[in-house]
Length: 315
Image (cartoon, rainbow, N blue to C red; front, side):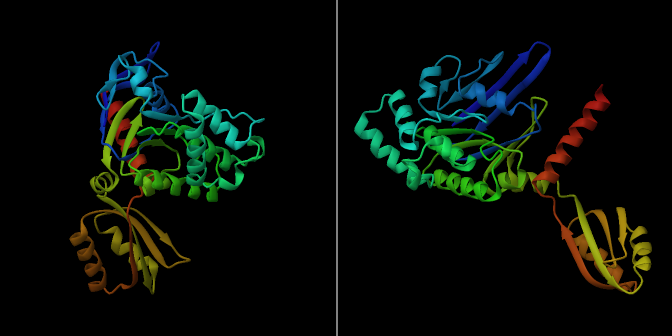
């Protein structure tokens, strides 16, 4: 279990983290969501014992990153967003170097390297020089390096950054495998749909503050009051537009090419059904009634916009 306890980090007048409190359960894939400068990398650096907090603490299975950094380091594997590789080493030699740095016996290192290269789908690259690997392969090799000492907790800062779609899918599948092995994984990414696919829970950071956290579906459900509805019709689309303008909808737009209208509707399933029935009763020939729920990107935008509105009112 990981417990962030009122974690604060100041750089002069700038608060990179502002009393961040959060609990992450063992075996969870937790995603940090936030724009550049939101505080994600700062939180990860403190958790990895590379940076000291201004105040507050993080407990990793009961051990303090402030008071017991050496004991915490033994439990974590950290993959930063920018990492270096030793180009003149082969993939096997690269992992062997880090295994030796962790004090692992040579025989144990060889078996561990074999297992990890298989896990990250690089078995056939064992004798290839690191410099000759693609970016995606280097990312997976760095992940293998992070796992050499078999940590319980993985901290992955933008692990899919710069990867092509195929490489991102491969990385996602590996993370799912690691979860199956019981690892607790903290991950940050700007590719929000991918976080939604692999994360059990997310935390939304904005200007160093945690403004929302929890199960993705629960957070989405809390914000599903507004939905985008597209209604396709036969006949005159202008008649349909005039009808829906008289209903409780917002931001209605007409699409002459598709003979449809799209609008924002704030209502539950029963109200949607009643709206559709009213349209049919009014003589509108509805051929499609499509409801689009918010995805993770929509959720992020709604949450941060609401925070911005609140802060502007309090200034």
